[in-house]
Image 1 (spheres, rainbow, N blue to C red):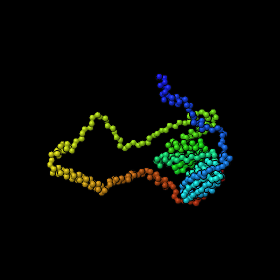
Image 2 (spheres, rainbow, N blue to C red):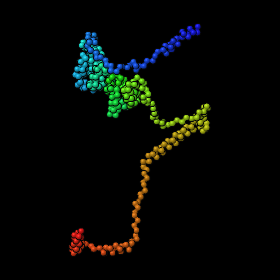
Image 3 (cartoon, rainbow, N blue to C red):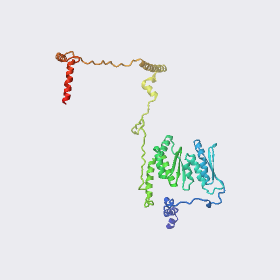
Image 4 (cartoon, helix red, strand yellow):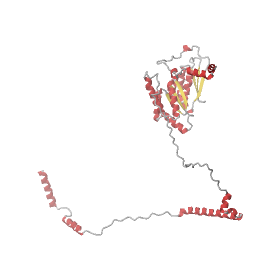
Length: 376
């Protein structure tokens, strides 16, 4: 009986079923053989065309009107190759794409819808027209509601662009995608694997994880993908692990509350007004005496306030303290005169001849100088 009860237990059967199921790796389900390319969809696949007409419309902002008006003939020409008609309504500010009787590809209207969405999100026509290719896809990531604070949102969006757009350019090279950051959205255009990485980087950046960490991981993955031996193995040991350091920048409060020591006894009960009057003796005074004392207290307070106000007014009439005048120190003049030094100066002055030399002496000096030159 005990054995039968064990077999009939509902939980035991479920546990065995869970244990028996093999673990499925999602990466194996998404693998594509090397060199495999999907065949293009032609008229032979759908010779009778579509039964119903499908159409999509999207609005565009006012600042895109001039550009769309200029490039709209090119948009119509690109969509006409797939037999899709396009209309531009400048009054309502909308773009519309619709299938025709000649349209044979049922998915081309979805690609046309994505194309007008990208054009409305400020993506240039040269990039938006690439969505019509079979191996291309697009992803519009809404980032406006991910961060509440507007200033913080602008800083993180700028972090995604990087200095002079260098971070965005590196991300484009690693993912083979075109990325356009505009307003509250990020538009990406490229292969499916690249779009998956772009979405991860953008969402992490909005969660305050710097994009340089993800870019570094993508660079390592790109190098590992080149090695055929490591393709089927796990790359966790090669990828860097970054720990999030939450450094609090909270300032200390101005008024610090000091906790008192815990005591099991309650605080003493404060004295009532009657107790205070009994201590001071006012309780036993008459009403007239109490009133007189109250008036005296009011008068003393008023007198103190008047004197304080008068002192503040008188401060404006008090002259500032002048600095003491410091007289310049005169250089000490020695009254003693050295007589012997003056006599020697006079003797030297007498020996010197004043004025110009006479003509005879000048001629003699010139002759002596000429003779010396000739000897040399």
